Every structure is written in structure tokens, then in C-alpha cells.
Image (spheres, rainbow, N blue to C red):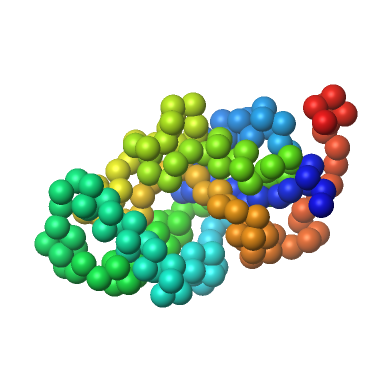
Length: 195
């Protein structure tokens, strides 16, 4: 196992691009001692996004359960608000909103490499729900959106950035978004000092 070479995928979402946060996000990643080994601005198709965000029943149910938990937390009735309390049906709705949002404008995709890259990037990014993201994280500092508001407006949550959740997910996502020839190897000047 090559610990220093763990890789993860990061995507600056359309809201992050529109708000001019690309440079700040890259800066935070690089300041952490991680290196960007692939980088590209792109416009995703619905087909690509459907591969990135699985629409398997298991994933849809997980999205629906998460949405139901948010409704429960705020004392809202999902059936009244969005017409159903079935987790899979809710997951299908949320999946559609996310795909639509992610395809609404250009994004920046990157492969980040370094020691514990997946965990380090997840720490930098913060919780998916902006209100639960700690100050000092990208989402905690730059996103104020609410899951309840996003659901009420029937849209994806605007939380600035995507980061792979684990090593297996990172491998799958990197293979989806980059070819081998688009990923580069190099040594940062401080690597000998840091490791």
C-alpha cells in the first residue's frame, strides 16, 4: 500500500463556480499538503451524472431516509410537503434534483493525491448539510443552504463541493471522470520535509 499516493475525487459544483470559489478551494487543498494531479473545467451530461449518483434502490432509499430524517428533525410531514413518505420515491425525487443541479452549469473536477487523501479532503470539505458543517471547513465557511429549503424548492442542496466518501467510491469516481492520461505524477517541493 502506498499511503502517500491515496487519491480522491473533488468536484467544485455549479454554485461554487458561480460564486468564484475555485481558487479558494484549490488553495485549501494545497495548503493541507495534498497535491492536485488532475484538473479540468467541464459541463456534465445527465448520463454522466446518473452514473456518478447511483439510482439503485439501495442508494435511493438511503437518500429518502436521510430526507425523512431531516423532515422529522424539523417537525415537518413529508407526505404533506412532497406528497409521499416512501423513502425510495423520495430518493428518486432527490436524485432528479441533484442531477438537474449538477448539470446546471460548468464545474471543476480534480483528482487529489496525498497521505490519507480521502479523509483529509472530507475534513476540509465538511458535512454535506451546510448547517452541520464546522466553521473552517469549505461548506461551513461558504454554504448557507438548507436541506429543508432545497426540498421545499424541489432542488439539489447548494453545498459548493463534492468529495468522494471512501477509497472505493474515489476509485470508481476517478475512473468515471478521468482517463489515465489525464492524471499526472510529480513531486511537490516540500514532500521530503513533510513525510
